[in-house]
Length: 314
Length: 307
Image: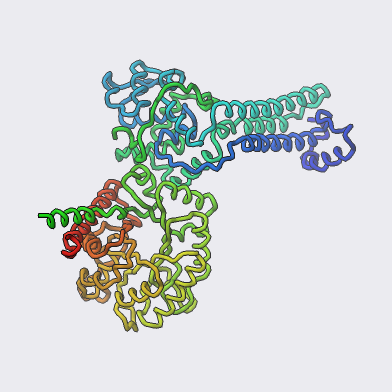
């Protein structure tokens, strides 16, 4: 540790940065800032970029006043929350709850060859067909027929303006990746310069960079939703908040439809008894390619009308 | 033959009152059950007081809920039926909530909840006097000004005959309802409990209320409790923790027979929740009672109308 490393030094970062900026533009190269000055600058730049990404997102948003729709289909809700991946996981949750699937290590398999007859929803039927042979999570998510079965939910949410069209999502994603890349590159450059100058106290910068870059990249899922979609999901979470931990109880009472609503709004992994299964089948949190609005071909249809899916046969 | 055919046509036309609606009190414990069966539920009622001091996202979620089904806000703490001034703070809170949620309507009780600087903590039946009527009318008018709309006014249950009362409950309620211009939320279990507790026939009691002003109905249940003092007698407590008794469905059918008004009927349950399937069965029973009442109304139309 260099002798000038003190907490007081870092807490004085903001005032030192202000002094630096007051010295004139010739001293504004951030790569020349001292550690404390750079940390403050980096934090402020990160928050500014974070805010700008949202600003760009909503400025480009279709400003037409979108009336709040009515989502009752658990599959649509799951798609709104997490794209194809979460929708597929919900389908598996439903099939597991109705004992139509069995686990084999990190894989799932349809229990008997005739299960497809009783699946119900097009997505569930497709999953049962796909799982005639056992598959792990990665294989399930890569199955084109399963992805195609989600297309109807995507179309419905686009029509209701709860998610953005693919083209807008790609624009938003690009903005996010540019912002994240800028922050990561800036941190990397500063670390290299610091080492060149013999400074090794880079821990704070590494931690801050990891946090800022993660924050920026983690809003990718929110880019998928429109402000109205964001609100819909948030309000559903508020309305169901009291029952958040009850999904397992509902399943044991054979109330699969209600359990699916909870699993759709909150994450399936939070359901006791199912978290272990899903942690094995989908072992690592993936940067969701399922959130990138996959292929849009086919008519997967919906799972039901205003009464909701009701568990598709439960 | 022509008269019989025409009478049958009229009877059929009124047998199913298209504007009758049946719903449930919204309770967080019932949230998923309600959402999973929205096709069987026409309307929802939300207890407003729980949201008066709630965070914005909670109130915003009510606005979303109102997109799914028409919502009524139901207050319990304004204390309108009193010769004292009712709570202006509660009126303002209800006004703010109404403005944000934009419900189909709001309701309160013909009860008092505070007096002499004390909060009772629950609704109580006030002395039924002319002075109380005057006070209630002032408070209802103030509430209308604050909120921007008249409340629908509900009768309350009581285990104790309000002392110093000079009027019977139906007469007192009728005066307030008619003079205020408000419509009535007739809680049939409250009516039933009060009638039984004080030795009246429930159906006769029902006929004394201003049925032409009834727009909403509550159904709930209760349980029998012993009177204090080991009298061996019992009183019916309206606790909202039990299923509506069969007699209350019968009163609903009578109401549907006696009034032409479209009715919004809500089942109230505050705890000891049954399964959603049981609540849906109660909703279906309500629809059956309404249908029976409307059909009976059609059969009893004056002969002149049938021709």
